[in-house]
Image (cartoon, rainbow, N blue to C red; front, top):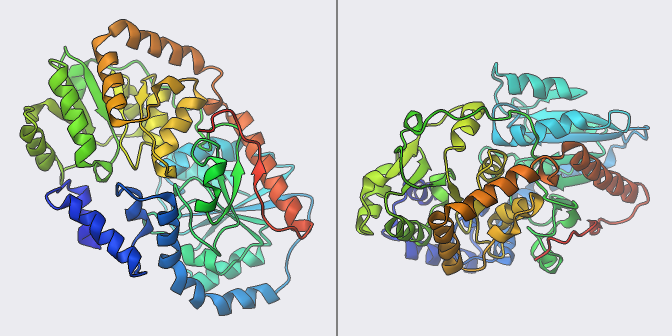
Length: 455
């Protein structure tokens, strides 16, 4: 399994077609396969991703049964005036999840909600860590606790709604969720898919990433926000960029950009990018630094008849500098089936349009959700060929691209994607509905309003 993941990160694609067969064989045999891995494998449906998640957690849920029963016998629920929210993560520091969520946490109505953090990540001395510590009423490090001890701590605090921000991403502790330490548990933001049965009651989403018709593919009840499910604040307004040379880019020529991690790349998507490079003279492809993959990607470019030096790799930098340099890109190209999430909202905040081709899975549809939330649905396409044609048309028509950038710049001031107060109110309304149903002894069900972005 580790070699499987490593070869994706290295963009070693010689046996790429065989990997789908490997994963399908594991699913057929009901063998454990990392659900996170399946998000980036082409050809798998959301229903198959659910099956994978449930197989992955089946043994752990069974092992947690005794602890779950023990917690269930302890009655410490506190009927206070404020709803107690518990946020569970190891990313309360300089991490994409914290950067997306921090302004929403700070905007929570403290007269209505009491905020608790349960952190199993390491502490650092950064400003984001300090903001995270300060925003919560209680910040409990649980990294040194067993799952049972952590579950007991959450239970003893009388948390009404436990919100998991990790899912099956790196260093997750989903086994804490299996103990059911809170009466309502929520899958939110950190993982673009279902966690399977018996872990969370609700998945916070929107009507584009999970259309109502896809509800059976998710074990959780869908909790719809009116616009994009992803929070994105207005802080860290990017300064004017330095010249292209400062970023290692040529002074002239079109800059296609994708700052998604290399494991999201596929041979099919990279072939489309090479077609674009071939069709647009003097263009370059600007990618995030990936030391283990760069040589393979340059070789792959040569295999498509493209000079490998037309791939420019950007070093990893802090968020402020990243947003500043990102403005130098002309057009962001999304990946599929695991698309841009934070990288897409970063691009839109920096004023750079994003072309995306969603499929049927949550992970593939996030950039489309974000584009709806900034008023640019025309950048969402239905096929690989449409993706190529739209990107090519924008690269060849500076006026059309400039008009899109002006529209994006004009929309940013009022776009729902960047409206933290409105987003927080909508999120809080979902939490109130969850708690109201719980207190009325009603089972979880679909809540929230569908927007016009359903597709």
